[in-house]
Length: 368
Image (tube, rainbow, N blue to C red; front, side, top):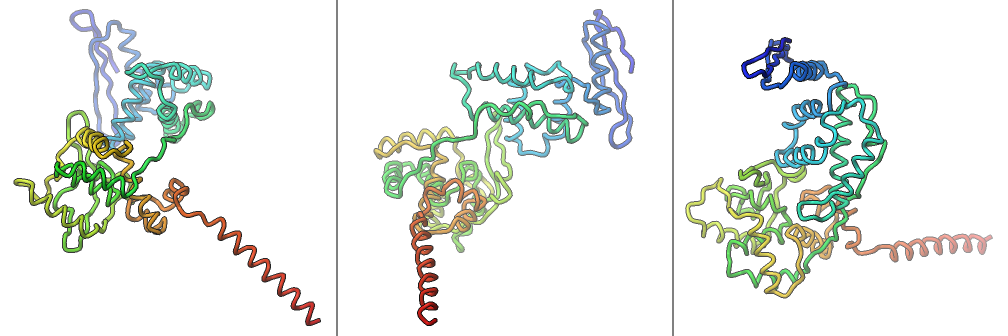
């Protein structure tokens, strides 16, 4: 593992190693100001190759990236990478991962809780929790695969709290008023019809193609999701395995989507139907809400609106979960307050049950 002095008084380090296939490899890095820096880089490469937990946190993040990046959806990794690069590495990059203690995590948390976003506002509790979850995931990975003894982030505990945004939704009458207000913009109208009457996610809507529709059966297949990342259109798998599903459309919606596709010039079977941006949908929803005189909700709240409508219609949590691509326990937990209360019925039946038992005992005494 030699180092070389180059022209311009800089140093170059060369590291040779055997990869997991047993093949000999070589990597190098130029531009070190001193021999000491070149040798330090060389030592880091050796520790990474040997999975030595005396490596720096920054070096371990490189290993973590190589291990994890291709195992998660691209947009998921994009979020994780941004948090690591902007909220974690600036504090811990040069520290040995094995020497980071709970007190260091506390100091880091305190710094973040004093920090602000690009608009000068304090980071939300939900965001702080997400950041902490990420650093804890890195330490857990080091424990599971690299021999680290403990997770200092887990010892300290989280900062922030779970996502607790208010769940808003439109009633059928409110949605009808909104739909009438945007009807003169056909593409926006058809997009919101799909969101409200099928309860699909925004990314699922934007990934739809004509091939996803079976108009004889009046179904739409949800098999992919659309994301816009770094000025690129990305089609990924849906959010969860259960999100892959076939949805039966109401007959009027099937007719509307046939009309929608007929109006698109030159669209192929696998071309996206809704070639619009998320900001377009946001702007149309804001404009339509104002014109209709209904309360402003988020686009994702249309999914809540669909679920609340199905609950009102009397469908079970299991049936609703299959339609919207959730686990039934999630529907029960998140929307429990919308299901009709059965507490009174339970109490009445328990009272009747107890009375019937008492009557039986009295009958026995009378016979005796």
